[in-house]
Length: 166
Image (cartoon, rainbow, N blue to C red):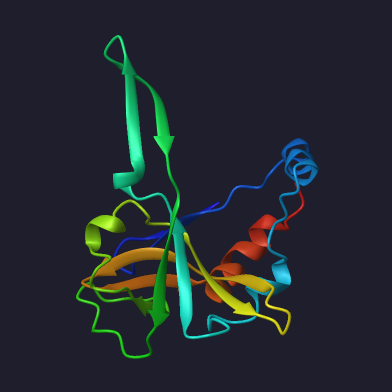
């Protein structure tokens, strides 16, 4: 299922994993974020949050006989700070937006290609164990501001489609 609204800055697709792929992930210790975490709101557990993705500068394309045959990637996490006062969106926005800022040193080139990546919040408990929670899906950048669509908005749209009888 896809949600797309060019003027509003929203473009996201969700794909249901078939049981075989779920079992493969589980067998390798990969766990999904519980759906209940998505409904906790778009506020990170602290003012800091992270954007996870693969920027274009971390993709190496390898060619063989003039055809691209392999892409080597290096994922990156970029630390951001949530802001309640983003600049006005020059394109307008019909969807509520999560907004955060990145350090000047990070620069736009270090984030190009990370569109659609998850924005994660993290808090450490009293033992120092980090607990991560998805907050939003990154949709666009404007200067040093990163915008995303809050998962609370997306779940309201995606939940009926994902849980509909086949």
